[in-house]
Image (cartoon, rainbow, N blue to C red; front, top):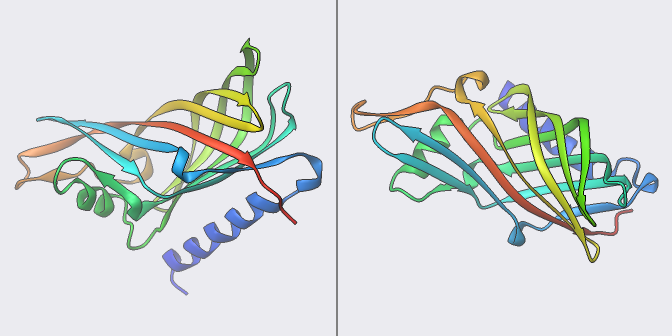
Length: 198
């Protein structure tokens, strides 16, 4: 079995574990793809660009919802579902992210560094997590707000990344006259709802 196929199967297994592990220890909520958004923003020597994720999955579980004590958080994006507004951007993003070899982008929360209550049901978190892009895993810092209302949880935040940290080459277009810069911003606004898991 080649490396990319093994990695893709491993990601699928991790997704399954993320949805099932230790469910009895806390309420698990599932990401609602139709009510969620994840966008990657970048710049070039000519103009800015962005791509949106059309297909996301994820799960979050709390030790204590009232205290925003997160026991587990995982997010998965189908790489080929990233679609650009500008013509050709979807293809460029797909090639850069090696979507033919690595089908998923995977984030798993590893450490919550601080939780600040902003108001009733609204918290600000600073955390670290493992992000896997094109087969390369890196620990990244992320800040996000958590809002809990009517058995729903909303996460909204962003993080700054460098493509080269994940062994990705910033793409070029038009015979190299348009060159993307290394820095990208990942912004997310995702909603989770209660689910029943066996």
